Image (cartoon, rainbow, N blue to C red; front, side, top):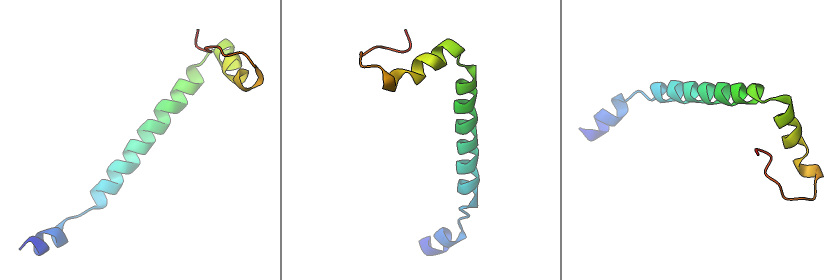
Length: 58
């Protein structure tokens, strides 16, 4: 009985939900990246070049 139930399940919906979740996350990250100001972008870009420990968001 349980074997028949498991065989009847359709997992293709899970793949579609995973793809939709990926697209939403990718679009959100891309939107957040494009919203950054030039000043914030320059501060984030200079992090690996500076020896001082500083918070780029402040």
